[in-house]
Length: 213
Image 1 (tube, rainbow, N blue to C red):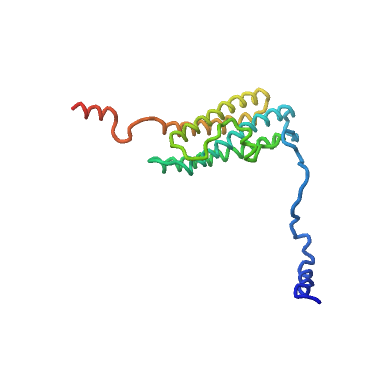
Image 2 (cartoon, one colour):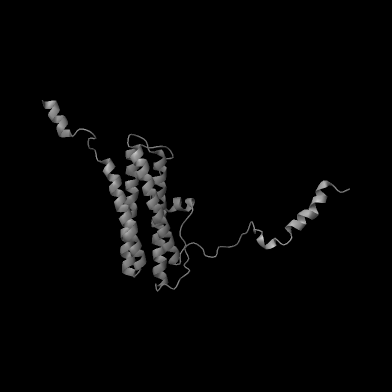
């Protein structure tokens, strides 16, 4: 005996006819087309070993930049205190700028024929920046943590920029000097000034004069 479902099948099949090419092909799997750490050289007039060296060094900077970027977002959400509004906005601005650096570094790695590090687990295994606690920290601790991360990246970037210049990899040198170093230096300035212990309302000399009168 046919049930109601059987009566619907012919119509369903008719509705599906002719749509084969429009259907998504799901659950596809295959081997990697390029393993991590291997170079698929492009015709950019650079020796393959130069490309490989720059890719390895840039991936370290990329992992650290991704980590710093995520530190900014963590602290953007968790910052507390009387400077909450200013720091909340500043941290998010710096997050956006670090995101632009992440993309620029990753694309440089790709055009050198390499594979850019991307996933959080791989970044966590690679970065030199210490992992913060999951919980909330005071604003001065947050800022100190990010200043230390900036300095790690700046030391790396200066070293790699010199090596790239010596090897003739002018594109990598330009990226590191004109974008990575300059952006991080400027962000260090904006952060560090928040750790200067100065009065907010009355100057020290004014307080001393008032107490001596």
